[in-house]
Image (cartoon, rainbow, N blue to C red; front, side, top):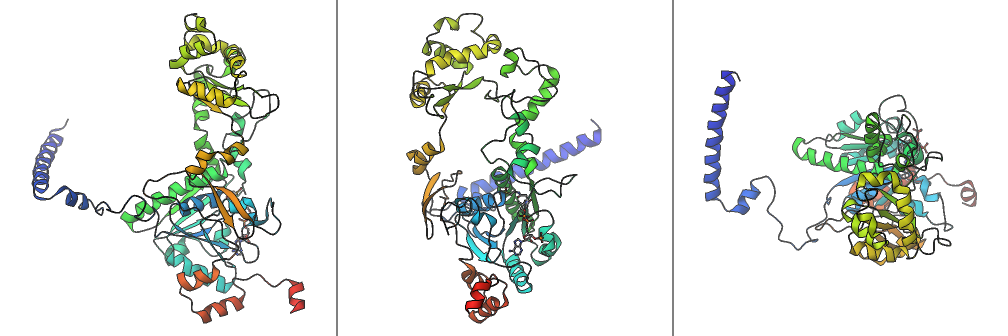
Length: 479
Ligand code: CAO
């Protein structure tokens, strides 16, 4: 090391000593609570847990989202306590209000289950007066969230530069199908993202075509990523005082969730993927990660096995993991104690070429029990298993109701419905899960109480056509 560095080191050591001395002095002088306060944080609240306000209380979200990805994000933020103001097109609203409708005249479950705990205001963003109202909202809110097709927000006149001129503290968060590159202008829906993000090529059975999954990893998955981006940007704003752009591309979100498959792609260069059952079956690997059926994604082999009643119940199955540390227990349970010492079965590498036969044998045992009996027996012995739960079973599961993961809410036009509450539990910020708003339900309230328009202003705004749909011809005739 150069002598100059040595000198600098010595200098900084001395400085550190000095500071350390100072810290000791401070510690002896001040009580610990004050030391914590000097960290820039308030003193710990003395209010009981759950009564000190919710995590995102005070945060105002201008919610310009529609369909699924964006609404998933803003619903989570609303559950965390943010005031989410959903802007919808007059007379039409979020397109999903009318999609997959099950109750005539009522908002669909597609909409209601993605827009709980929000307020709805109708504004025609292309109307001059509508633009004025929107700009007032931009000045007042902390975050704008949108998932329009590329360029749509700019076409409304709400470029990032313009938004920042109006409100430099604004966080502008977007979901798009693809990031910058050859596909950036494409419109993207769930399954497009699952395919383009690498999930579909690695899902399904080897012999079959690529498969999409039922979990909405493209839409809801990206919405969850966006929520983290927003909260991080809000946290950074505490230091910098300025907002920023947050972009989540659905392709990126899916890839992030499918990262173990990119891991396997790189492993392929160094030999076959021995934990994939095709290895044991002697099927050679190609140049890309294959579909792995129900093989486990980790180092512990697993498979879905039939349980009692499988002949009539399509969900009478269990996921069974032959975790190495409990291999002996599994052998005893399924009546194969000799496998514990048999060199063909005793070690994980010895078992790899025999996985199909091993799972067939375990299945002979699971087929004598219901999936819940297998769960009960195996869990007691630390063997990881997972029953295949149908959506009916999940909807009726009391423990999910008790934790607030599945919540029943009441809606003025559809009546009671189930929704998924906050899957993220905060001990000091219980989620407030409320029904979704009717189209424009809070328009007057937001104009008056949030934006400060007078009663006369509201009358004028209504007359301008900026917040109401054009009258239908039949209605106009009657009038
Ligand atoms: N007032 C007036 N106009 C409004 C409005 C309002 N309140 N809200 C929306 N609009 C307009 C937009 O300005 C846009 O008009 P222009 O095309 O003239 O600019 C128009 O409505 C349609 O918006 P869109 O293009 O976003 O909607 P779409 O149905 O054509 O496309 C989707 C839908 C999802 C493919 C597209 O929005 C998209 O690719 N979004 C990004 C990716 C994404 O989130 N996909 C997941 C969707 S969930 O499966």
